[in-house]
Length: 373
Image 1: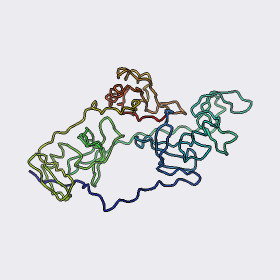
Image 2: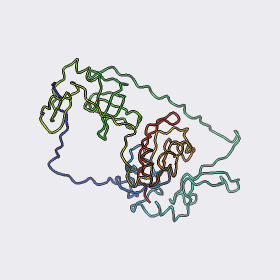
Image 3: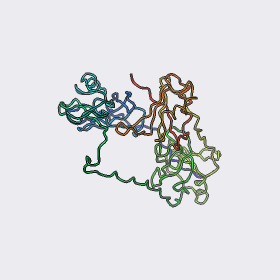
Image 4: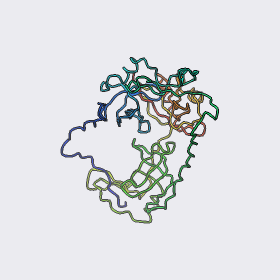
């Protein structure tokens, strides 16, 4: 056997349990503390459970995190897109229904002056605030104009090329940027990944999981990665004894060696260990109330018809396909919902297509959260 590091984390608690932290108060005039649970409208027009993460005075006033989704879905919303008993009168769902104002996203014909012609327009914001009492509806109009009617034209900024990742020099551990390896994820399972950054510290390696690049990247410790490069580096330099409080073991199976505490350490030297890499199609069953799947990293060229074709063989086929688009430009956001209603087998079959290529991009597919009524 070889020496082993005992870097496990103990599971003991402190000597007492403190009081639960209260939500932080929001700005004056809006009694909606940070941490408040409420119901919020998403881009697809549906309502979901969410949590307040930030509040400000200017509209849209409230930033929310949709329960069960990461921060990439966080959104700033107006009070008419929120439902909560803490909201002041004249805002939220009641204001929207009782004010007589049209819903955001509605199409209409609008005049830019009392005597002008009407032009196609889209309602992008409504307000019940006193400051907008005379003009409570904000629209985006579509009209053709001659060049002479345009003033102070500003060209769009040039697109910046994405910086190329610098290939760092090989470290003493044998790892370097770009190296393919296997890494532990938060669900306790192992997946193929690539080194994208390195630093000093307890978690010196940032990995990007294959098929989920840029979404699930995370810093990991040396105990959370597996690579032949680690074994080669260990063969050159004798492994140092760990100082952690844990029960260590060597992967050669020659017996465990007790450390000084309750954690479990790992030494990368010794014989190789079979890594249980989870296949793309190996997914858990959906919850009984699962309405379908959410798709991210979708090609901007993909259409609802493309998605219908991809998932038509899943169970009974999709009951509805919704491609999320920018309200002002109409362009795809690279996200979509595919509903299967109560066809759980269809939802499971759809998630098994996670990582499948569609028009040049590998889709990330996961179960959608149940919507609120």
